[in-house]
Image (cartoon, rainbow, N blue to C red; front, side):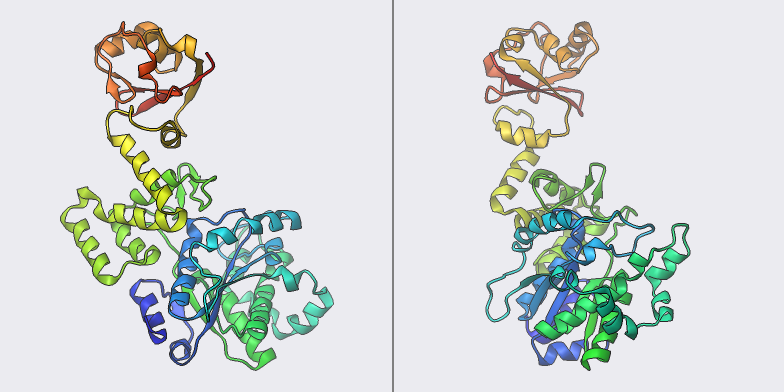
Length: 426
């Protein structure tokens, strides 16, 4: 991809919501330094951060220089954009701890050693924590009227609500504009990117650079990602989908993408993968011609999981996914089963209590039936499974061969209800 075509690339992928006049010409004539700000409110980024991360990664591959600006300073304040009420303010210690969890995740996408356009990870606390209030009001605040700030959509929306807006959050626009000015002066940054709700803040930065540095700066905003079903992207019944495997396992992460609605999968392939137009067009046809095969969803899940967690964790996630639909669980590893069934109710039994008991008694002890008698009746009716295989004899005794790696037994009632037995001790 040549440098001049990057805006066209964004446009084709549906990633271009709006861009300032002159930005296309800037890309055509020079290597651009661009930045995106990331909020350090948690120790991990989440899938809602992926679109701006991919925007920086695409710019770098096109020969431009990306900056990931982590808000160690502004994170103490909170951005009112897109929020209906004020966030809980973080302490400096919490912000610093959260910052430590982000670089490894960004390194999956950005090359911090590339020549001649390495990515940079910068903390705005480097300048915001040392600036005095009087300096800030004198050097930055004087360039913005209250009328200008009140006209911004994020502020107007909050003023019209019951909560209102605090002076702390009202000042956020000035802080973000100041960040852009500092990055412009120190690193020659001439493009800020963000979600479409950031347009007002970005324009404030462009104005400040023009007034204080006599420079020309630009903004490019991305669409806010939504689902066709009307739910918030990146939210599931289990909560936020994180990039940190300790918060969202690679299996759950893979399943999130695998469960993408047919109406959304082409859009997400364009947003979140490196696949080219012919490959995506072929997958779009597959959605129309054979939606039941879910070929596009599988490719999406593979591409994004490998990018975020690596090829080895992708393989584990795929093996674990097959467990759900593959019948017998005997060949599965205990670690894969624990990953698949992390949300399944479990109980712990000693080896001596479990082995030698009947399947009916063990299923009752695991909580799958209200009594041993009910468990026996379910077995006779073909409704109880042991490690994925139907049990037909209500007097069958459990042996060590029925355990998985000597550590687990999985009981199932019907098609969905499962119980996990963890074996400990003798």
